[in-house]
Image 1 (cartoon, rainbow, N blue to C red):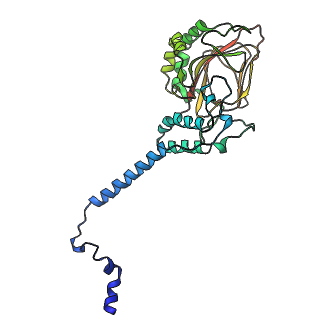
Image 2 (tube, rainbow, N blue to C red; image 1 turned 90 degrees about the vertical axis):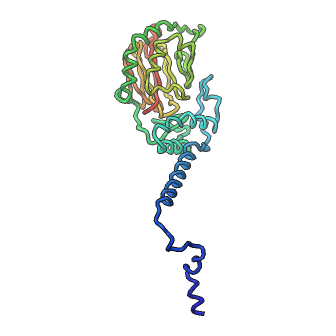
Image 3 (cartoon, helix red, strand yellow; image 1 turned 180 degrees about the horizontal axis):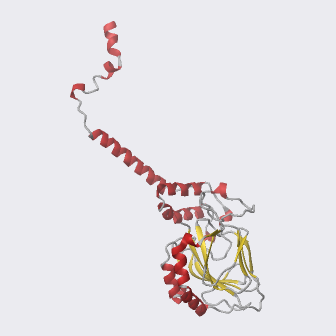
Length: 308
């Protein structure tokens, strides 16, 4: 009996299944195969993280109120799914850690959305956490693009004067222009919601070329816009929030009479003709032309750029 029990150890149980130890040889192939399998497993995991769809929450306040806005037709999950697809390419610039951050932002939108409560910063559509947060950004943060726009100022101003019209109350809106939520505010879009307005771009070829030369201009994304804006004297655009904190809006002043003011996050600024002003419009902002009705309208062009 003792001799039989001696064979019930682990070695005795598995010795028929194991090769003879005397035949073993130290070879690198098994270790290489194991490392290769782990690498493939990691790549597969990263692929799933990068391409998997997240089930976002429904946020009614993420739908803009403007008529004709492409985002207006989207509701709930649909709008966040489109935002995910639009932002995915940008997240890839920052490796897989950027993708994880984007996933976290979409997954936790219910936490970041503040409903009807007033706040100094409250994007209406998408908030990406952990981005630098400030109402205004220094010119150096987008130095290349700022220099291109300011060097192109004479050509842009000349093209603007070629399409500028008088916006008399009750008169038909000139071709290419549109009326915004406030009657005294008109826009002439070259890009709207990432879509090129071909005829308007053909009417402003030098401005179009300047936009094409920018490094960070969002020209294929639902947050990307480029337009001329006219604000009539006496018009005030009340406090509003932009759709996202993932972009920086660049205002290039074209014609700026006295009394034109922009307040972002409680900090007032004034436009200067021929110079760019960089703002994060996800902060509460108000725009006003405080001149009298008899004065000439305040005019400016603005280009939206994605945040780097």
